[in-house]
Length: 387
Image (cartoon, rainbow, N blue to C red; front, side, top):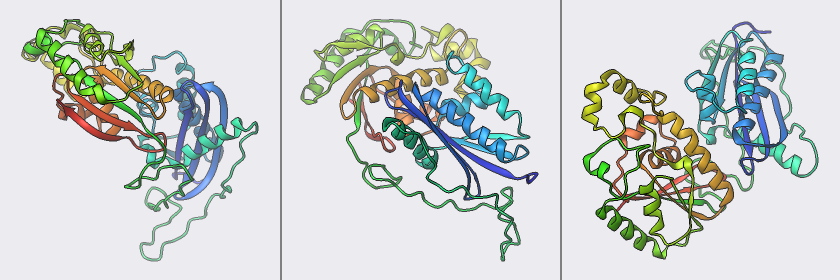
């Protein structure tokens, strides 16, 4: 063992269907040296379950190598990183035992840091997870493809005098991972395959939107102008080929969606954030009556209005709804009729922007935004707030 050294754990998991055939991958590194790889198929499961299983495998591998090491855990799952960092609650019953198991492993180490990274920077763990799922689909088990590298001896750098074996001081450049056929590398190169396109349509005007009132769980109807806006949006979409219309259950969204002349699939995950005690009140009223609570809400996406829902909770359900649509309509086009927060959240996720970006985006009534979601790389925002 090398007391005081830092190991990096990169973990990922995936499901082809969400839920569907799933697998995980994890790698333990020191600098650029791969010390261990772990991957396995876990049968039918969700993305989140697979991601937690990947984390657990990575932590177990790191404990076998050096239980005295400081760990730098990196994952592209915002949910797992936020929950393991203690900023988000673990609410789903399937996640609780996995989060508990991971927490027990974390406590074995002197220090563990969790960091969210974009998917494009988690290529090794993602590759392992896909290899495990591919192997299971072919009826065989996964075997490591990368040779295991022994614990490196410190190597003195001739210029700095620092030791490459000491990750606290030496930062080893990570070489670009090779890109397999069909995978999208980061940068300007064109993605492969057909994306799932989402047309994100905000509902038309209501009495609450005219008066600029908090309107989440409350359910005002469209105003006459709001109906005109919805008809205008439907006319604009006449020439667009789409596979399905999905709507929030709120009347203002469903009525807007119905103008498209297609059967409407209602999905509760795309409803507006529940603003609790602030429903039906203006910003100024809330600022006057709940000044401290509003300051906390504006500063932290995990803070909810009294009796309401946080933006972080909204993101969890919106992300789950998106994952299901992407799995069902691969290469297709989906119209999602929703509200300000869910649409902004989808745009923010597409841009890999921080939660604070929600306050930097403006959506007009009945505006249309377009996002292409590629299976092998980052999403592309093709249009925003078109009216």
